[in-house]
Image (cartoon, rainbow, N blue to C red; front, side):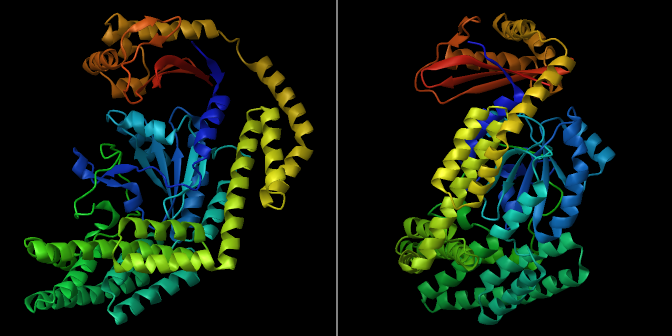
Length: 572
């Protein structure tokens, strides 16, 4: 079947599905390490580039003036909150030439990132993140969890700065306040004095990136001096491990090498149980690499130390007895990294996140000292009534906020019955929450909102040109018919700049061949049904083109046993 819908409603309905993931780990997002990146090996996770930071992911298009005009607001926020550890990224699906032009003309004070649709996993990426229209924004906290999902930052009713402040308060960065920054600098010195070189290195390199963003030469020089001390300490720890190995103190040697390996080489949670690199869900996703903000690359001294550490680990892995010891030590070191993150969460009252991290250590790194430490922490969390009360309040508050968010989005789509339903759920389920008070306020003025929406709708209908959905649908069918008829050049030329950038005649031919192989041929464009091969994973194909000031998106997707021509979206 064919379904036409206003853009706002499409955003809302798709958004409600993703809104349930608020508080969960954000899907991976990989970018190239350089402009010349050509393979999967040349990509890196965005969350590794911007570790310990709050990320604001803002989707824009040069064809949407509102999303471009909002750059001035983002510039102000980048200047104000960048030094405190908030990174704003402007994501765009257009080609590099367009992005470079916008960057030259607008000179944004935040990074612009290209989402390259020529990559095979781009469909999966877009389905995971769902950026349906310019202005849509996500905020990811320092623990890589979704704090706010799919809101339109350009909407005057949204207050992006308030959201940033709320996330900073809940999951503060290392430089969220001047007091916290100085405290973390002092921590590095304490780690060095205790001989905890790995911990000192991790914190110092992250802080140095913050110092650079602040353009504070004194702080950068202070970080350089700390890193120099850490380099000397790392070299001593390596030499001590080598001596332990000679004296057949294999467990001592393994512990020292494992800490240096995990902390200095960044293996951490990107490795499997055998120390091999894990492949990412979206490792083929390419993007235009952000300019700055990423963790600082260590100097020559650290690279030499890393190489020597890995050489020593390789020597231990050459013998079955010492191999078992070093693998267990590596697991323990990875568990310690996660325990440190959990302890930081406990310090800031983020008990739910801490519990998740400790649980993951117990499950993934069993039979290690790190797992024992994690289990002790879990026992403390479960047996402390104050912590349990705080967790219950936090989880209730998050659920109330999710329901309020849904009610708010339904109200904006002028679906007031659904909006009322969710506002009432908040009030009934969590009467003492801040969200419940907001819901009461919204219900009190809902009659006025309904009246205003009706007046606005009548005004828009009066000003808007007459709709011709029949013609739009006919054009959609005509485009798809070009594929069916084998007119691949015509299909590509019928699309907009985005489609032409992602497809050529040969790729269109291959695309259609793949669809035929996987799903079967169209039986009828009127019914729009396909006969898929059962058991296939979902496959989505998106085609777009411009018609004057209107656009069209056609989505084909398999859902269980049937694939449908399931959406035609008409947007302003």
